[in-house]
Amino acid sequence: MSREYIDRETGEIKEFTQTRTKEQQEVIENEKRKKAYRDAQGAEKHPFYFAKMEKAKEADNMLSMKDKGYFAVIQCYISYDNMLKKENDSKLPMTRKDLLEVLKIKKYDTVSSLINKFKKHGLIEEKKIDLYGKQYKALFVNDEYCFRKDVNKGKSTKKTAKVFMNNVKELYAEDKIKPADLGFVYSIIPLVNYHHNLLTANPYEPDASKDQYLTVNDITEVTGLHSKEVAKKVSSLRWNGMSVFVRIKRGRETIIKVNPLIVYRQEGYPPFNMYAEFIINKK
Image (tube, rainbow, N blue to C red; front, side, top):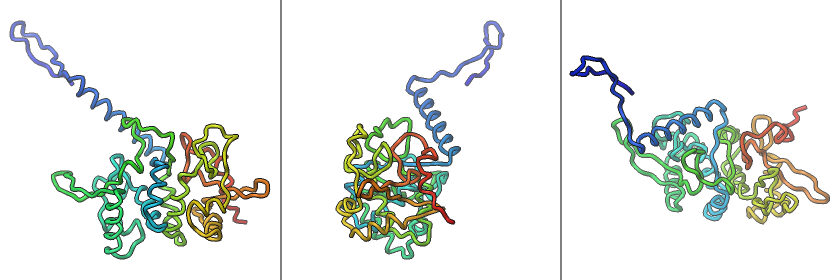
């Protein structure tokens, strides 16, 4: 930024340049990079968050399948600082009325009980914030469990899974989809393999030839559900003309692949050949 001034000795009009400290300049450059990334995310229309796979396993041990589903849904509403917002570009935090709506819950008491449970387990935090001269109550999801991609955080993504927020919202908006269905999806996040999106016992194994594929019976043991219930969820969870899971025959066994448009381990947005098999043939 520059301004002009008159040199009293010479009468010349000169330019005065405002200087910034190194620290101030770094803050400005950081903000520019963050804004550029967020603008790109908005243009791509595929916002996502990173779920920490080992932490998802921890939450799996704390909550019922239904409550895990609610937790999976609310993570799709986090902003870049993990505050819950109804829309990605909302300026104010999500209200309890908003939460009632997005979770498809009818009673305020149920939402309050759920919030208290999540707070007790350290999954979310509620605090007062100042915005535009007013004070608001806001809910924040613990970033030990999930976070939005941010060029300044520098967090490792080797043991995380990308969850595409809008697709999960659309899935949950389906009439037949219940919170426990999303809880099941959340339960399999720690099992998604980087190479091919199949569910494996060793999802961090860098050598694809050593992958240990999981069958329906294996997933039954992991989730604690009956094998018939697992099989039903694997075959019935659908949204927008697509299935959430596909079953693949491998010898005498059947292994499971999760739709990469829901959960994905690799960089970027999944190419068509990664999810073509999930498109439901309506003929």
